[in-house]
Structures are given as C-alpha cells and as structure tokens.
Image 1 (cartoon, protein in one colour):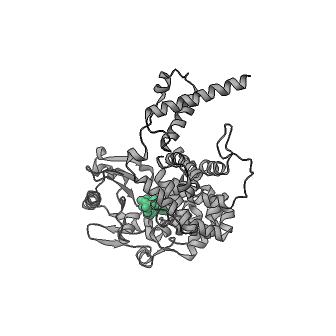
Image 2 (cartoon, rainbow, N blue to C red):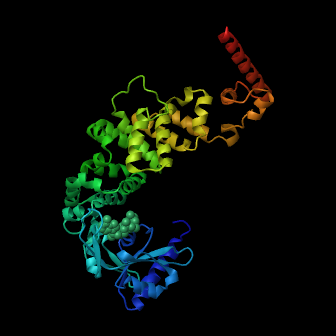
Image 3 (cartoon, protein in one colour):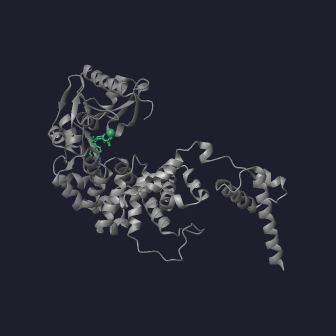
Length: 447
Ligand code: ATP
Ligand code: MG
C-alpha cells in the first residue's frame, strides 16, 4: 500500500499487540511478518494472532477503528493512524475439513499452538512477541529458516491435498527467498501437480506473476518444471520443457531481465514457447484481422490471457513486446521512420530490454540494442520531434477529409523522420506531390 511508513507501521503493530496483552489476551505477530524479519527483510504488512474473539477485538479498539470484513474467519482489521496502515488481527483458530481442496469448511477458535499447525509451511508458522522480543515456535520454523528450507507443517501430502494452492506457494517461497524445497514437500507437489486446476485462475495467475517479476524467476521456473506444475498451468509450455536447449535459452533470457513487469517476463517465457512451435504456414498474416486471432503470437497470448483472466493491459503489453522485439535486432539497418515509432512507444524501454536479453543470451552481441539505448537517451524533441503537419493543414489545402489524411500524414511523418523533409513548406510540397500522384493514378485507372 502506498503512503505507508515502515517504521510507523511497525510501531503500530507493536501497539496493537501490547494493548491486547494489557487487556489480558494472548497476542503475537504471526506468519509472514515474523518470517520476513528473521530473514532480514522488511515485512510488507503485519498480522496479529490473538486469543481475543472478533467481538472482543472490536470492543477493545472501538468500532470506528475496526473493520469486520473477515470476521467469519475470525479476522478483524484494525486501522492505524496516518502512515501506519492497518493490521489484521485474527483469533487463534484451527481449520476443519477442506472438501473443496482449497478453503476450510469451517474454522474453530483455538490456541496459538493449533493456530501454528493450521498454517502451510514451518517458516510461515512462527509467532513473535514484539513486547518481549521472543520468537514463539511450535513447528520448527526457526530451524528451517536457518537451514533455508521450505517445508510443509505436518504431513506434506496431506497438507497439500487439503489446499492445492500451497503447491504454488511452496515454489514461490522457495524461489523468492532462495530456499530449498524440502524433498517430501517437493514430492507431494509433484504427485499432486495435476490437481492445481482446482485453484481459481486468478490465484494461479497471481502466484505466477509474483514468481516471474521476482529476481529469482529462473529458480521459480525450474521448480515449476521439476514439479510438473508448469505444464499443468500452461500446457503450451509442454514442448519447451522437453527441449533442454531451448528451455535453457529461455531461462537465460529471463535471467537477464531487469525488474520486468509481468507482461515483459511473460513475453520472455512465451517467446521460448513460440521457439518450439512448428514453423507457421507462410501464408499466415502477422497482423490481426477482424474475426479472430491469426498469428501464432496472438493465438498463444490469447490462450494464456484467457485462461489466467489477465488484464487487457498485461495482454496488450505481452503481445506488443512479442510482435516487435525481434525488429530491434536490425535496429541500425532500419530507416529511422521504422525504428522511431517503436522507441517512442510506451513500452519502448521493456522492448529494448527484451531484445537485449535475447541477443545477449544468444550470441552476446548487443550492439544493436546499445544503439537503441543511445536513441532512447536522446532529448525528447530529438527522439520525437513535433509533427510538421496536422489534419488542419490538409484541410486548408482543400484535401477532402477521409482515410487519405492518415496516409498522407504518415507519409509526411516518415519523410520528416528520415530527413527527407525538414520544414513545413517542404512537407506541404510533398503532400501536393502525393495528392497529384493519386489524382493521376485515379485518371489512369478510369481510362
Ligand atoms: P506474502 O504476503 O509475502 O505472500 P505471507 O506469508 O504473509 O507472505 P499471506 O498470504 O499474506 O502470506 O498469509 C499470511 C499467513 O497466513 C502465512 O504466513 C501463513 O501462515 C498463512 N497462510 C496463508 N495462506 C495459507 C494457506 N494457503 N494455507 C495455510 N496457511 C496459509
Ligand atoms: Mg502477507
């Protein structure tokens, strides 16, 4: 959340625990925030677990400063002062039965030990008392953090069978924390990989997104491949994971991306998938036609975007990057009027990033993308000079409005970028020549 000050957030999280304790309840920080501080990361948010019931929590902090959004699971949101964010205060609970393979059928309030046992991995099952500074560990989480292991609490197969999302969470935590995956937990995920399909598309996509934008994305992909989860969540990747050379080349590209958006990282992965596709029919059109997707890029992007219910923004970005990155491999040989529109596009930086990653992974020669980067660094008025003409100029020339405007303005823009015309007068002369040529053609055609 924006506008949050990490120190204020932490002070408030400590205050919430201290107030609960002073009122006679057990209260501790729980889960991710404890793990994060033990591995030396600043927690994104703080969760408090307590013996107080939701009603007692609301009574203590006041109805105006609490929200009962998750009350049926025993969770009350306590609102902090400005900059301190909000804290989720959850009553200690055990989860009973998981008949849908994803969410508990019912929760019952319990104690800290049972609350630790219902959590997914030992590293996520820790508590911390911010008043005394003591870690409370019922599940061996501290030892696993020291040993850098992601291990299911209890029987790995049972725990994954009750909530299939844990397979992706296991991979994500192992990758992003740079931990190993406990062999029993990895084996359970491998055996149950096919069941990941009971998890909603949005949750799958959210996990994959967090893995792909993380600096450890290559490790995440390796684990997704080893467990077999990748080809379940993305069946199109099946030929890629079989082809060791192309798989490694794809990882080499992903490795080289610097702080990518999800759209960019996905493009890099899908580029690998496309590299294994049979060579398309030569008659296939690279551009979209009305009435449905046509090019291999579009078909692939559409399939993944639809399955994972991705946003239009991500989908547009991924598609545009895939359609254009290869062009930059000839950047220096291209007319400026061809290259410039790519380099002034909203995603130009990521396009150069993808192309550079590919070129560097393939043969290490990035002179073409270095050239692009130099161009990107030009002052705005040089990279993207104002147009010499606009529609009004054509109108004043008594050219009838219509599709010709776009074509003429584009021709003038290309000529301007390529240095063929440099002034408005020259641009207008070019328009006259082009419209004369059109008129002659029409006369010839009419004869
Ligand atoms: P992050 O927020 O960085 O993903 P986190 O550990 O805080 O990490 P959350 O999804 O915010 O993860 O969940 C908070 C805590 O709730 C976890 O640390 C874990 O103890 C528990 N938890 C979350 N999801 C599950 C799950 N699917 N099964 C069991 N316990 C879970
Ligand atoms: Mg969290």
